[in-house]
Length: 466
Ligand code: 5AD
Ligand code: SF4
Image 1 (cartoon, rainbow, N blue to C red):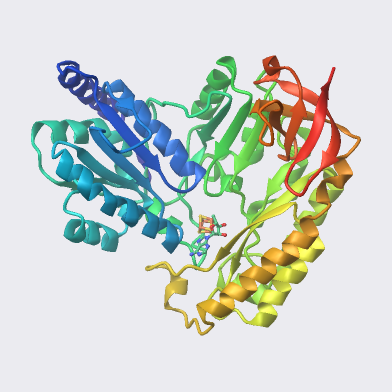
Image 2: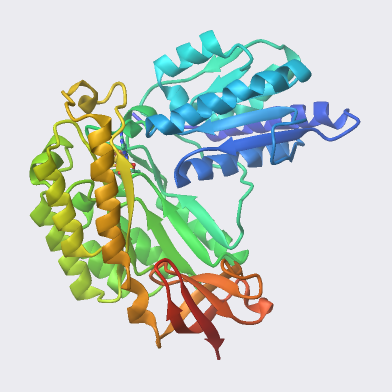
């Protein structure tokens, strides 16, 4: 069962925040924290909470661990290379600890919800002081107080189905583009994926809490709200609500802003949801619908609950209802037992759908998942060849994809100075396509009409028009 963290517990944590702040105020220099977040938007959002809590305790922030009083690694477990990067970075902190034995080194996030990772940290990374799991994030003030008052290694990784903790302070990375978690965890158990094991069961935040956070963000000037969850399409099932209902309510908040969301599962991308998106003028015209494979046989092995045909029907319906929509996807190459013939079905699917862009991954075995135990006879080298073939086919499909925008005037949220030249501005269209354009700097943070003059493989270039 989901554990709702009580208001009393949150107020107890605030007391610890004040105690740490008092200790820190006695120092000559304000202390500094370095928080390094790895992985997805969900983790970035947790990183904002970690920084929010640390800020309340009196910490400033630095971009590097050197000279910091606290270093926290907020980790990702989705693929092996993400974990390797964390271990590499953690190893490098040994020197920092030698130089400054008072430094507090903490590791949190998805990686540490795995027993074998905690064991490895205990054994091979003795300079790590603090390990806390995804269900213990809200207890950071108490954990830091413990570190400051009695220096003892501390491992706190509660299991269970997962928690919802409201009222954690936030230090947002970006005030223009604001992330709002709407649900946590995942129930899908795709056979390759570690997320359901490290993030617990699906649980939705209360409708009213989300709307209040969205309103407050818009009131303080946010122009893009990113609604976050592992599978946003199943928002609210246990509350008798739905993602469609939530989208309509966020769309109805007065003000000029854009609504984005991630991630979506195709099995829950219903016609009703697509109709809702078509009707909600603030919702992005970008569908990121991870297909993973074009082979129905492999999709079944992956436990995805849709066939190639189901997926094609959804994308056809999206194109019919919202002809202007951009479609992107995730693909895994080299799932255990995948044959070259299966892989060719993925190639044929991407040729058929013509995605605007793809996020492509070579399958990474994750201990504890179903797929981990499946025979996996294809050598990595062969998988690498398939991977390169996939990139080259997508490269061909993507080429000239943006030509269709040349001559059109598009609405763009201006985010800052240009990606190609400092003298230009940059932003994204309603389809999430990047645009550099000529215009006055005062347009930063506003929606701007941009006439598109040139198209390249990954970017459009144009001029702002009144
Ligand atoms: N190996 C490779 N890719 C994976 N993903 C999730 N788990 C794995 C894995 N074990 C990819 C999926 C998912 C994206 C976030 O990461 O494509 O949609
Ligand atoms: Fe992982 Fe599947 Fe859940 Fe996405 S829907 S987090 S891929 S188990």
